[in-house]
Image (cartoon, rainbow, N blue to C red; front, side, top):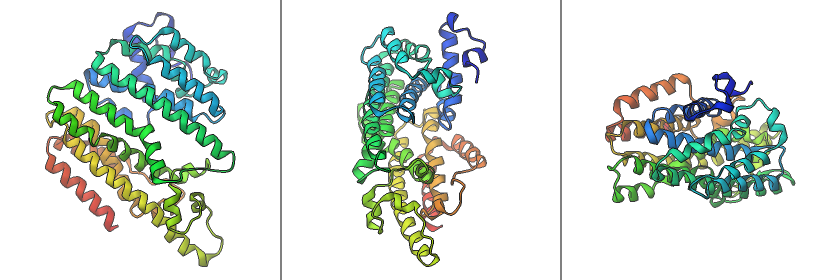
Length: 372
C-alpha cells in the first residue's frame, strides 16, 4: 500500500488542519472493520472526539497485538504512548518519542494499522482542537487502556511460553474485557453528556451504572463469535472455571476433537454447554446495553443510532450462534450477512426514538435465539 497521504493527494510536509482531518477520516475506513459505520453517523464535536479516541485505541491495540515484539517492549512502547496524554497540551516531543520507539520493520509495512501508528504526529494534535469536556475523557481512556493492555501482554507472553494463553476465572475475563472495551463505555457516557445539556447529572449517573456493561456486551459477543479463530493462535478467552464445570480440565481441550465417533457426541454436547454459558453472559450485558441506549435522549437520533447499530448486530450474531453448538459446526465463522446489517440500519433509522420498539425488537431477537 502506498502512503495513504499520497493516495488522498496530501503532502505530509505541507499538511494543514483540514488535510490532517481528511487523513483521520480516510484511515478510519482502513483500520475499522465495523465501527466506521456507526462513528460516521455522528456529527460535530461528538463525531470528531469518538473518531480520534478510536484511532488512539487502535494505535495502542496494534502495539499490543504485534506477534514479533516481546511483552517487555510492548510495555515500554505503550508507556510512551500513554505519556503523550498525561498533559493537556499533548507534547510534540512525547509524540516523537513514541513514534521513534516503534519497530523499524513497521516503516516498511503496507498495513494500514502500522501506517496509522507512524502518523501519530498527524492524528494526536487534532485533539488539541477539541473543548476540554471532550478531550479530557479521550486522554483518560487512552491512558487507562495502555495500562491494561501492557498488563495483559505480559500475562499472555508468560502463558504462551508454556503452551496457551487462557483465563482462569470469569473475573479474569471481566477484567480483560473491561480494559479493552468496558472503559470505552465510560468514555461514551462522558462524551454523550458533553454533547447535550439533556443529559444532566442524574441521567448521567444512571448511564454510568450501565456504561461498562455496554462495552462488555460487544466484547463478550466478539469473544464468542471469534473463539475458534482465536484458538488458531493458541489463545482462548473462555474462562477455565466454566470449562471445568463441563468436564474439560483446560479450555483449550475444547479444540482437541476426539477421534472416536462414540466419544464425539458427548464432547460436542459439553463444548456447546461451555459456549452456551458465555452466550448467556453476552445476552446479560446486551440487556444492560439496551437499557443504557434508552437513557440517551430520544431526540439525539445520531447518538442513539451509534449505539443501536452495533448492539443489534451483536444480538443478531448471538441469535445465529444459539446455544453455542453452531460455532463448531462449520469451518466458516458464524456472522450476520450484509442484508441483515442493511435491515438493522433501515429499521433503527425509522424507530430510533421509540423505547417500546427498541425493547420489543430486542426481546423478539433474544426469544428467537433461545428457541432455536
